[in-house]
Image (cartoon, rainbow, N blue to C red):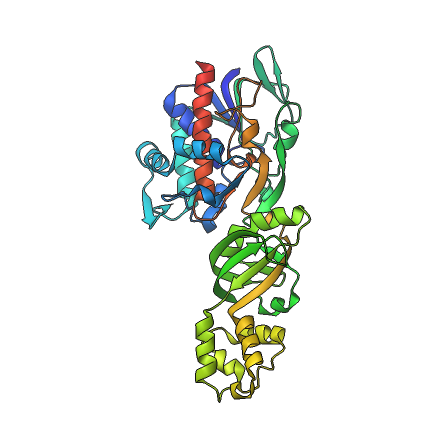
Length: 404
């Protein structure tokens, strides 16, 4: 059998590409996957709730090698187009939380089941438990594993995050024989960070709302990125959505030999100043207890070299300034991150700039790449799934043109 199109990878982008492809034209198509079931990583997205997209996506929320190409991909099939396809074609009921879009069941399994039912109705074939170790091109056909033949091939294998789902970065080996493709080294992203400062390890499990500023080194002269939200202290460093959002930038800096630093703004300086002026008979720790949790206050005062049991009235002006400076913000040095096992997405992959506009491989008519295998990753909040949908749609259009 010769397929019109074989999609390698039964993840979010692969399934969506197949659905978009078959919604446009009746084709002999198959989705092949190394695992025994589809959508394993999709089931994990959003803590199992599956944040499908974001209605106010800003391109600044992505890291990629080519922002212009990314803008083209997102504008060709944005959040509203994805919403319409899921509701009108797939039959999925959605819920909206401000700009965030979820299935009305708040279950990723509902999204997966709806996609699979749609593909079944459109006669898509699935081939499971079949890792693809080789892709070659002979006599106008692509040959996978020496026996699967197709007129076109879509690589949608994912990156390297959550490798137990089959997304292990093996696509780099598949593409090795094809010339002209640049692959940025893979690193974890949307991942908890390790820090050099061990005094925060005792705060493991505690959370604090803050705004984060990431700098390229300890001198904090070169600003890199910012985020805000709830930061979680761990026994190795920090986590939480605001940390995950800047993690990709931090890891790139570490890989470049830098020592990126984070400034976590914990509270308003005026509030600290007011409490120190108002509650002069209290201990320093008690005066600050209404602003930050006591365990965090203890760590911050230790950093400032101030005994937490001293009364505020016993502090001189210089010591008060040291308290204010130490409490309003915490400085942390990033040394690395947790592994791909704890990463939600991958940073790095096939550079957008090394592909044609329709995400086909130059000089290889009919070979396309979409999803997390591409060098594009975004912040939390539907950004990464929307890129999966957008890139998959663009590729489906390219496949149809190629077959016409």
